[in-house]
Length: 206
Image 1 (cartoon, rainbow, N blue to C red):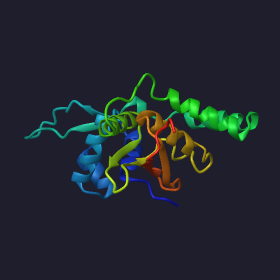
Image 2 (image 1 turned 120 degrees about the vertical axis):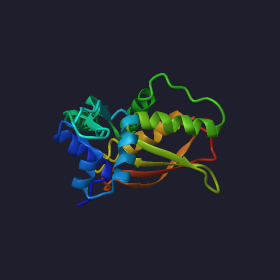
Image 3 (image 1 turned 45 degrees about the horizontal axis):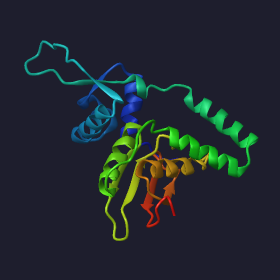
């Protein structure tokens, strides 16, 4: 059974408690407070958790900062709905129609976003957009062409059952970059769903 990431374990604990501070999380998770604070700061920026106003403790020194789960990170029944929708699509469409529908969905996820500027600028913008969508994305230079890494995919729990979601991720990245993208590595069995994409030498118009 795959182990949950520190990030996911923090979210799980905050889902079960009204609020916790870094020291409490560190003690329960058996990781350093520096590691906990790193993940907390990232998730505050992403809007997954909230920083609460410290309450006076009556002790000397500044009260420890406490954190709670933001509404966007609270679990709903969306996975049940998504499973029903994808299974319905599978039953009512051919493989080619399914692919076209996924591509259409990928074009709608970024909303009105339009890629602009040189490739380096578009990569930075795409990563920002992906992280707003709860991917944990980054890009790095490579000998042949840049590559994009998803250290977390928000669909990771569904991908073993619905591998076509990888097509959606690929097309979403293509739309954000306006470049042809090739998925070269994927591990749907990792708790956060690691994926690696290379930017192709061929443009979308080729």
